[in-house]
Length: 127
Image 1 (cartoon, one colour):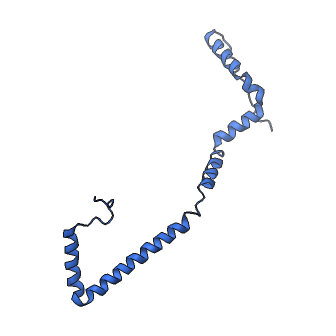
Image 2 (image 1 turned 90 degrees about the vertical axis):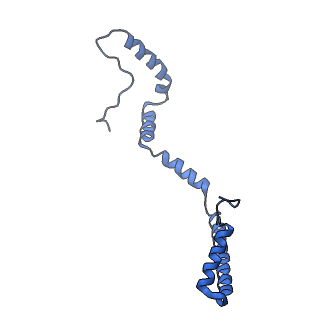
């Protein structure tokens, strides 16, 4: 790659070869007109690309897209269930969670024939 970042990296040898091929194809009479037409076409394409880029960039609402993606992540089934569970159990269960975890650990170390309940259970038949 050259100094121009690899865009149209053509050396002097390739340039002379292209000029010789163009001279054979178009001939010495039509070559200047063909080169001028090619230059105008390249210039026009660059202008079109530039105006298209300028027109598209302001229309991209990246902050809105980020907000939409965050709101879509709230629709994940685990988050919906977690939110529903916290609404059902209430804030008192969250405060009691460390104490319940400690009692479960204490119950696990003691030998008991009956398993201990870790927290409130939901009735699947309740409406």
